[in-house]
Every structure is written in structure tokens, then in C-alpha cells.
Amino acid sequence: MPHGAQVLVIDDDRQILRLFGRILVDGGVSVLVADSGKKGLELLGTHKVKVVVLDINMPNPDGFELLKVIRSEAQRPRVLAVSGFADGALLGAAGFLGADATLNKSDAPDMLLASVKNLMDREGSSVSCKSRTKRKEDGFGDRIPGCDQ
Image (cartoon, rainbow, N blue to C red; front, top):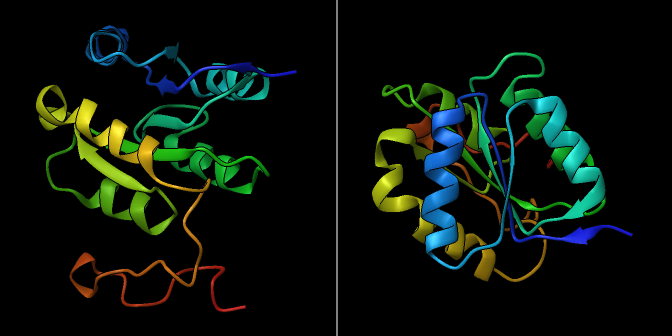
């Protein structure tokens, strides 16, 4: 039976893991950390989490691959995709692929705890296609893959 935890942080940068872990623990959140996508998937298999804080720019598997796997699972935690790239293209793509929220790492010290708690407070396990919209300014139009079936 899976063990309970509120948040799983997956990032290949150990300094980011320590920073995010400290911010969340200081904010009263139970945290697990994984320094690779592979370890993150292992922890998801043995722990029930409400939110995954997922670095998009990681090697094997990358954050996009992990996001697809998380979205295909029956028990789908909320996903906060994070990236250190300032142009926003990776985060826009992550939102398009199903991340519930996105955050630039440079904003994390001020916004991480509030973003995670907001996701934890949402009802249900995931946003349905019917209630999900994409903005045209994100460059993706109105259609969401897998929602027009």
C-alpha cells in the first residue's frame, strides 16, 4: 500500500531540491525529493502524493516524458512544472501537455509555497478536458491533444 506524502519534488539539481524542500517543509508541507526522473517514478509507485513539482529540463527521462507518464496513471497528482529558462517556451509546452500550473525557477522563492498549496486545495485529482482551456497567446490555439475524442 502506498505511503502518504503531500508533495514530490523531482529535479536533477540537488541545490534546487534542497531549496524547494526547505521552502515547502518550512511552510508545513510533507515533502519527498527525487534527483532523477527514474527515482521520481519509483517514488510515485510507492507513495501517494497530491502534487508533483517537476523540473522540465532534465536528462533521461526528461520532464515532458515524466509528465506524460504521470498523466497516464489512474491516480494522477497535480503537476507544477518548473523551469529555469526565462523565455517561457518550455513552461508553455508543459502546460499544453497537461501540467496544472507552471513556475519559473527564478520566481520559486516567492511563489513556490503558494503555488503548491493552491494545487493541493483544488478538488479532484486532475482537470478534465471540458474544463481545460488554452490561451491563443500561448501559441497553442484552443485545442488540447486527446480532448477532441
